[in-house]
View 1: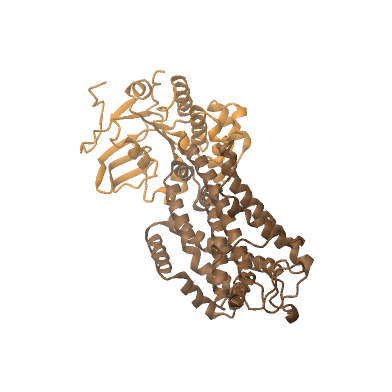
View 2: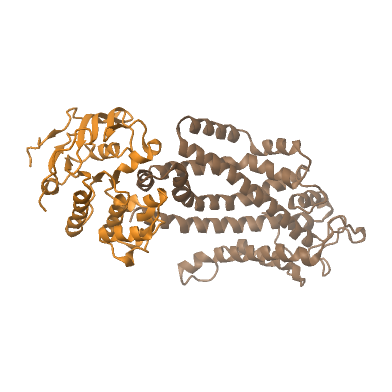
Length: 241
Length: 314
């Protein structure tokens, strides 16, 4: 899959932006003054060795983790509250896809219920829409009545993608979305996300330690430094690739 | 005293005697004597015995009182202190009341009070744990210090204090046990909520726009329910023991009411006169269902845990 040429340069304010974000877990500094911008309609690749804070940055950008310093803005709106306290509109504007679909779904629910969750939370549950989303993500109808332990990781991740797309987010944060999956499922899921990006003009942050995937998928890549490295990311600063 | 006591007398013919004769096997049968063919079925034997004992006791408690229509205030001094006989399968107490019949009544009252008290403590503890776990921060710290405060007071002492504020009645016992025993549930629920909140699927729900109420209703409570259910089941015998202890001290249920604690209290006075049955029988009525519930609860926990584990780490 070749990177699709990005649309015309967007307005500067309509971006998902992290500025000088610092995150500490106790005394351990995980992110130190990191800045990153995700532009609508483009795929931003976030690379880096394991443990360098990629997932932490992804969670900060999805408003699921409050940084100890720095600022996050979503399309010009500064984020002041995080997680449950963040305004619904901001939370749902950025969708997060996890590395391990097994942990990212409630084991008690069926795939239909999993996909329908954000719609139901928004008060507009709609079986037809759920079926359409499932089909878009490549799930056949017979799988929808099953529970997570009755389907494979790949099928579960498809359900997670369908769930993430259900509220038409303006930004998609894919945190190692395809790492646990086989090559064909990986290609298909990336294609699903790409189709959504082209249709809606959403911005995508592709987090992966797999540089080969990011070279093919992302329009531009950002490399997060080694753990403890105070330097922020810089474009194409990875000599290894 | 029940643990060292001899087994109940030989099976009498009266139909209402089923509870005791069928209830004693769980403790007696526990070490299986026959060679084991299938370890699975052997491990299930105590569970089956416990379920059977509870079923028989439950049926007795449900069916005997409506059939017997016992007047709890009626005494018959002519047949006072009789040993087990055909007419009174497990003897009579000092004022001529049938020990077996009263034990069934006592079991009904004690378990009803125990169940309501256990539910009350679970509701209080569940709410405190849920609030502490989901809010975190200062409310969490305050509530947990409250829990510590309640735990630091011996709960029988606190229970006695609370009961002393009311006149002896089932409601007083329920309040006393409920107010002193919610701390366990609060701790269980809080730690479970904390662990659930850190799991990605709850984060995914929040990210998908679910509000606080929806997260609690849809993702926390269904996962807490088995733990709460188990804690309630385990709390019932404990609450019964407390009811018994309070009644034994003369603070629990009114003396005319046939509760197991009242009966043991009455019975111990005539123990030296050779009247062992009027305190042993109610003692067994406490011991057997307690053991049976314990065996069943452990079985459920064993069944629950591997399933959860396989769901988590597949």
